[in-house]
Length: 158
Image 1 (spheres, one colour):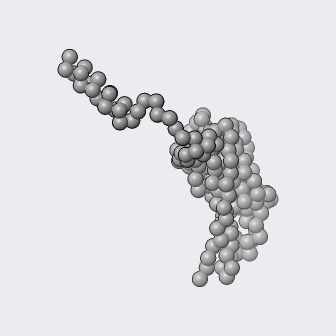
Image 2: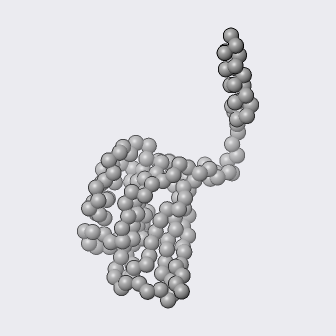
Image 3: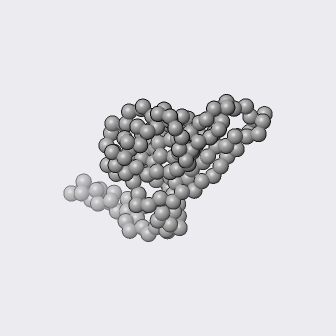
């Protein structure tokens, strides 16, 4: 009987500290679980260039077919159930020194937000004169819809 009383007391204490029907403020930002970089590159191995784009690949078939256009890397082996693959493609650039990355995934007012950062060439920096096509593939939790916020950062060279 003493054990049961201790268990009940522990549960009551836990609910009083955490609450059982806590209301959430929809204006708050909630960080979603981390995303994972799974592929990246500066050149499309099969040749050619693309235009700047963002793609959500919802099936393994879409992911594998798209990856094959960019790289000879093998697809990740684990299941994609409950996940999507995000492709960020910066498009054709006439010099090296450009980049694109996902910096944050969170929800705000019920919307899933993807924060993307593009890295641009800075004045006075030395870059190779070669056409590039920076891209990255990320694995992240699936959501119904995504909004994208993009910022640009210019490299500084001294």
